[in-house]
Image (spheres, rainbow, N blue to C red):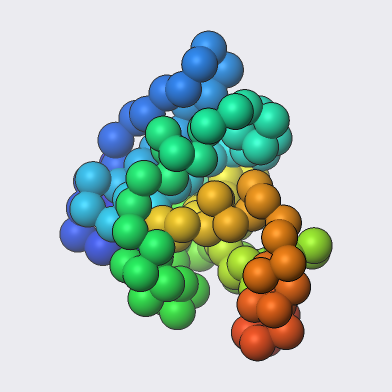
Length: 128
Ligand SMILES: [Zn+2]
Ligand SMILES: [Zn+2]
């Protein structure tokens, strides 16, 4: 499976018994399904093991929103987290997969005071 954002290749990564994600070998972006995502939010240290990329790289790739789902090949929807509006990610309407750039899942998992400031600075994603 090809990475939707860079020339890298998506590799299967597992954590525990229930978590299986696809991760890019180059940019460390993560592709996961909703049930796995909720498991990842619950699982201790999942962000350290799975979201191991450089947040600076993720930040740059975050600007790239027009991508196709690595699984279905159709354009993904540009969306953002309802609670932490500065976290912009892409989701697929067909397979419900979501794409997180490096660092985004770690950010999503922990809602801190700094996140309130980032919400204020970046704001919600403009509609396309
Ligand atoms: Zn990549
Ligand atoms: Zn899809």
